[in-house]
Length: 292
Image (cartoon, rainbow, N blue to C red):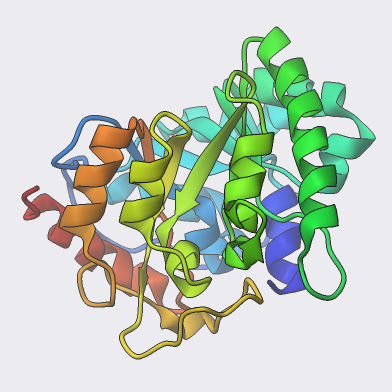
C-alpha cells in the first residue's frame, strides 16, 4: 500500500481550493443491494475531488443517490466541522477508518472523534510491518485489537479490521488471516472484507465469509480486473486494476449471498481507479440489476 493511501485511511485528504469537480447528474435514486444492509460509498474513491473541493465532491456523492459514506475526519479540519459538512450535504458516516498509530497514541481521542461524527464502527486498515508480514505482527495486532475493541465497546462503538490481502500467507492455523481472526475476541473485534484485497492476496471471499459467520460485519464492494495476478502478499496493486463491479474477476452474486448468510450489515463501494467518477455510476447500475 502506498504511503498516500495509508495517510488517507487515517485522515481524509481535503482542502479549501475550489475546483469544478461536481457533475450535473440530475435526480438519482438511492442505490440498493439485493441483500439487507446499509450501502454507501468509501470516500477514498473520490480522493482526487476531495483534495480540490470538498463541498462539490460531497454534492456529487449525494447526487449519485448515496446517503451513507465511510471515511474519517477530513484533513485540515475537525470532527465537528467534518460532521457539519456531511450534515449539510445529507450524508451520514456510520463507519470510519483511522490509522493504527492514531489508535495506539490515543484510543480516547479516536473515540471522541467517532462520537462527534456519529459513527458506529471504527476501524483500521493496515498493520504496520517492515518486510514480510509474519506471526509476530499478528500476535501484536490481535492484542492491540482486543484492547482497542474493549475500549470502543465500552463507549458503545465497535472496532473492526479492514483486510488488506497480505494476511493470507501460510500460518499455524491455515493462514495468518485465520490466526488473526481466531486470536481476536469476537465480542470486541469485527472485520471488514475488502473482496478485492482478499482475492489479490490469494484468499477466497466466499470461503472466508462462510468459514467465519458473524465476524465480518462490513464489506468493501470492489472488483479486480481480469488477468491481474492473485496470491500477491504485498497488499498493493495498481489503481487501474480496480474496475466496474461485474466486469472483473469476482463473482458478486455468490459473494453477496455468502455475505448475507455470514451476517454482513454494512457495504461500501470503493473504486480506486483514477477515473472512479466515471466508473461509480456504472457500478450502481450493475448493482441495481443484480439478483442473488
